[in-house]
Image (cartoon, rainbow over all chains, first blue to last red; front, side, top):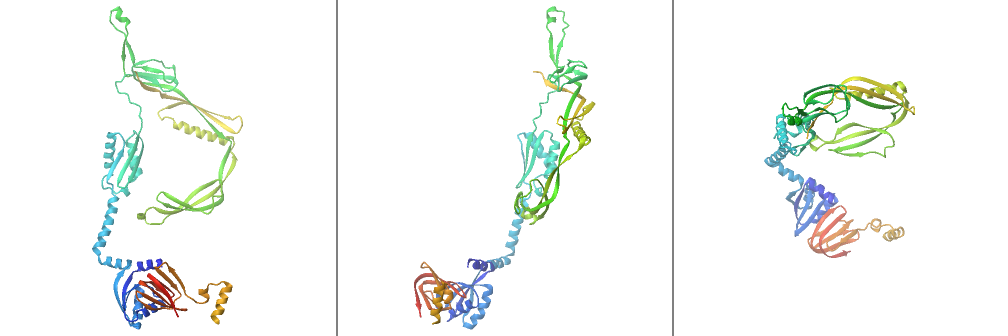
Length: 402
Length: 89
């Protein structure tokens, strides 16, 4: 009965007053003909109050004539009538619609920009830049391309190691992590120049300070190459004072080029394991709601080795209702096969890998000599490629004198 | 004779009597509600008395503030303060 009542509420119902000598007969007629009446009360003689659906009421009117009863509608209720009433109040409706629209519009604007960092200088500078680039109060948040602005921030500010741009409600939040830069020495801070790597000095040009090594000398990491500690010989004729050597600390400066060796070893197996699809596939479906995914599939994935491919995405609801999509996933069974690739192929692969290592080196380094050797491993299953590079590079590094 | 025969069958086969004998089933909930299945129509209705015709006679429900909660082809629900239920032949 609850269901019927709910249905009647949705469709709308009328409260009717039945007056007449034989009201009960009308009730019987109605029941016999499948009309549904409920909440029937009889407050006084010959008067009945009842509730009835709209459609039932028109049919009831016909029976009323037969039985000699009078029907009067005393009230209307239900969703149908509520909507009907609302339809007359056009201004109220437009007001409500405008309100919803206004809330939606206002909430899709950016109202604040927050930069989360301890550095106040950086904070205000980034805020200013974001404003110049187009994120300010009143910008539509759906139009903000996060990647674009992040890239711009990261390109402009080298001291930022990591950054994230979030849009939370009407706030744009930029989170930053600053790089820990090595302390730059002041121009006049006394310092030495030391070797950053082991090598043989090829060339040394001290601009300021005293060279401690000659070309051809071997230095190891940490050795002082150009000293900022200068000893002055006093011209004073005084014998006593001559003994006392005066020391001056300077900011050492210079170019130190040295031959440095790099060695890299790669191991390439002669037998390669490769994955091939067997042709068996299994499908599953996934419903995405925002970032959450609901996956349903029949049975477990029967493959021990498989590849996953998400094939398509159908938007289930319009964008305004959120990101609800359906995508199908295809699991492709894979098979592992071993393949003997041979010496030539292995050497080629080893060479490619070593080539990549060379490219990783700093660009300003000049390669003097290079040699690549290939040998077979003891167990004869791998090719070992070893690369030796002789590089001419600047190994000077400033270190403060304490 | 026919009724007795039907009753015997329903006893023997343990069939529900209200279906075999076309009788009405009455469910009374406390003193507030009475549900009557398989009725033949209302004879009289006022807030103190409801008389309902059934195959086995008239059922008279007496009480105070009686309301017919719903009425369809073969079901009636009466609510109110029930006092007596009588079977009239």
